[in-house]
Image 1 (tube, protein in one colour):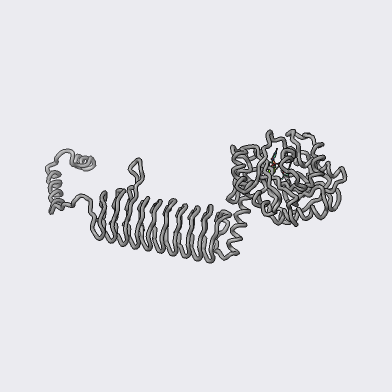
Image 2 (cartoon, rainbow, N blue to C red):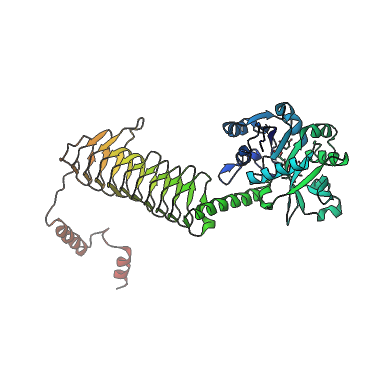
Length: 483
Ligand code: UD1
Ligand code: MG
């Protein structure tokens, strides 16, 4: 059924005092996204007429997160409670008949669960439908007081429970469906009679029920879906559930994950079949990995694109880089933004690259910095080579052709060009272009002095015999004195 008569209201104006944070609660992250972004993304596929997000604390930042998802925002100031938040949304709701209300701090809810709740609401012709859950530890949540098998009498907040109500383990998720023409008159009668002096949306439930309106519970099949994030511990638990969901999805798509609970994968990451993720790997942002790759222990990839058959050795960091088919990197390599490894290229241990194009089959195997550089194919960069790309003010490019051999411990002072097939002698400081097939050598010439060392030793021995002062160790002097 079409949901064009309905609108979504996401309550996201609160501060989240229990998090003890300078950041508004709904901006905290779990499972690779802010809480409020998860909520809006779950609601969007319902196809309602609009999505309204109630903002307040750090409203501009919250708006910046939800506006790209085509939600509109309404400012609630001051924040006088969840019921007040609904009153503030009234004008924006316009001609909507049904409101689907979601708290911005319960990010695990699935679209299917919301669909089922809306269907139940419609078929019962209810004034209100509450998504509830039966949990082992209900502390902190509002409790559902039932009138009968399928009717709710009231929601009682944790702080207002009578002793016998503490036993109730059915909780209010704060996710509801309201028929608006029934909600508004009830809400108008709700008073801020609680210790926070807030207008609680939960109090409208008891009012509706007492007026004989239909208020039904819809029990969530998986109680974990309604977890709210009020504390750091809640955030950690919810993050863990999101991460597990993502790993299960990848594993069922043919990805091997070793010690899965140690592997962190963001929601937009794609991984191809028969790729192996070793323990402690993090795949972040919009990282895309092809088939048959191996990402070894402790590597972190952010917005990286890997084609098929790529090997990432342990403890490698790759950011905003593209690795073509059959490339090998690491261990302990750092590929910074703008690195592009063409097919079969290799980056070895303790190598840093930035804005660097490494041509097909070229190798940078050990201890190098390659920045603002373009390398042709089948070029070999010796251990310890540095591109000096920065003169203290500007960055300059280094261009190295194909089949070039750069000797170890060379510095290439940019801007500089090394032609195809050229050699650079080890230990050179290259400041001028080197032509194709030439040799660039730029270092002090070596001088050998035959016999120098043995002459030196003879001189030292003679000085010792004469007992020249200052030549002996204090220990030897002491020994002599005893004799
Ligand atoms: C609320 C419910 C409780 C339920 C629990 C589920 C009320 C009074 N209580 O409690 O029954 O078990 O959620 O997680 O509703 N907000 C606003 N404006 C305000 C106040 C809050 O937009 O003036 C937003 C908050 O940003 C938050 C959501 O509403 O996203 C819920 O508020 P919160 O303070 O977390 O309520 P709980 O104490 O968790
Ligand atoms: Mg809450």
